[in-house]
Image (cartoon, rainbow, N blue to C red; front, top):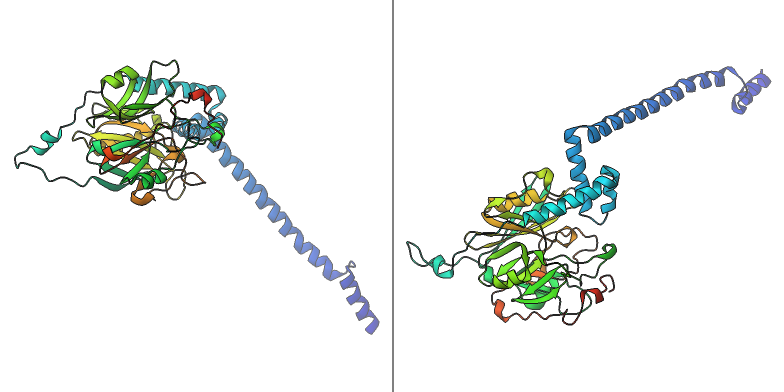
Length: 386
């Protein structure tokens, strides 16, 4: 008896074909088979869902609308070429060309709005009106976005400020601290090779206190601008340099599109709002107050961004009679006194170096804006060299 017990135990431990191991092997097989069926079912379900999603994405009106909005959002980023994987390379070229033409057309209608003079603002049934606070900031929220609206009650308190050193741009927070401004926002765009530009080579025109600091128009006779004349009236649209001088331009940068003119919005729907992205836009109310709207973006869980249509509607809701797009994306920034950043810039490296900013001052006439581009030709500026 003892030898048999020892032999059976040894056989069981060594894996010999005894009765006990045989039952264990039979018990394992169904578990393996069930796991495999589950994996195959999961894979098949995923495949079917992917096929249905692809069908919706490419073959339905709502899917196409979402697909083109996604492509537009990519076009506004440093990965523009990725949009071709969503709509195709030919459609990408056509899409960009279409928007360029639309933006040009949106700048053609002549603006006829007027703003009251200080004397007119002070007249009323009760006599002089108590002056409002120069600046105020309000938070704005919408579908998937969060931002801020800066209101400047006196448009003549705004100056376009540029960097004070050659060879690189300057952060708006630095501009505000350096000049003692009350507030500041980013303004015009700039050449940005490989999306690592130094912020020193602007696009188009840069005008401050009525002086042209930078002229990158080349052979172009006119350009889209956003700015203010000497009386504080906002100008936005397509103008030649001579027209701007005749209109008494004071502060301006080149950017587009104009989204509101003569009190009406120019973008018909959200699907035509040039994708979802961080935004900086500028508008003016009938009473002359300037509205700067900054929408944060590219930060899921906080704010993914807004379309230009969204920005247009926000400005209209706050009384804008004219409005225009400024450089947005990772350049979007709102700064208050002492260089405090209010919003959350989307750039992974934080606030960007820029060629210009609209800043608010208690005494704008005391501000000196040097021409750091004096004597430089646009072709001589290396936009990527720090």
